[in-house]
Image (tube, rainbow, N blue to C red; front, side, top):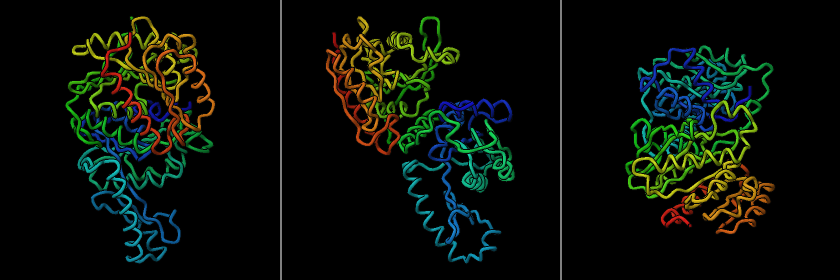
Length: 444
């Protein structure tokens, strides 16, 4: 069965790991994601195992005349793995090897600075290392990662991927103590065919997921500058009798909280929404990310596009939020993506909603229907310049609104804002919008 996205793949793989292997929960296990696509998968596994998350940074050392053929690999802290058979067969001199290694080690250092922002890697000595990617084709990078994890002192190495061909898994069996795949299709054509959403993972998402995981394990901001003390906890949001899992993050002294409404096929673990939430935390705004539907409800596709139902869940979550200690007077905003944007606008249009501001990312505000005319909260619509159809729908929906609104088109961005730098623009614009309006009294 195809995965919805990398987060869904991670949750399914985590269940497989917990059911098949005696994996120790907690700090005795370290989950290592291969950037960039492996990090969203690894994040879900780390959460399920209550284990720390880190990137595993490796660079293959390719033959000078045939770079795709690895004669070794390098990792952080000077780790070096040499494939003696290839070196001897191709008569590679020490000088030639060192020349390639020097260039690759410089790139390794640049990536370490980008993802860790000066923080050291997590120690692996004596621990179980779970190496994770979003899929395997040939397996050359996964092979290097397993070798590097072992060289860093891991007592046990587990390679875990959502999808891979059997031939590659067999070839990797000697590199790890266990090799686990959720799907092993035959014939195997491409990793992306097993994902409904296989959009490119950006560096910003990698950094934010590492930061979130670092906070959960007492490491402070694992990848960003320090922020004020923050209350960050898993919660159960009650929507009437329906319990919905979520994550509530409230920086010390927060004057406002933004409730996120994810789109179809996504969840509270949406890396893009989490990245935006992280930008809000830095400036002292809180966030609530929660699942709008139960797993049973999601199985019925009609529920996924039932804007009335989604809006009612959002309203119920807002009521629940305002009942939490210390948040009774907090100003509330909505951030909606795709269908979640329609739910946010419809919920904000409700009588007495008191919503201070709304931001829509690649949203479908047209699905809010007649409720658009009743929205009084200032609304910001963010649309990718390459998302032609959605841009048209946003322009038409905005024309129906009577309250304050603004449309910003992000150059070079598609529907999912996976292009380099585009998600950062979304986060910056949303942050400024919420800072402006969550400081003022909600509109009447």
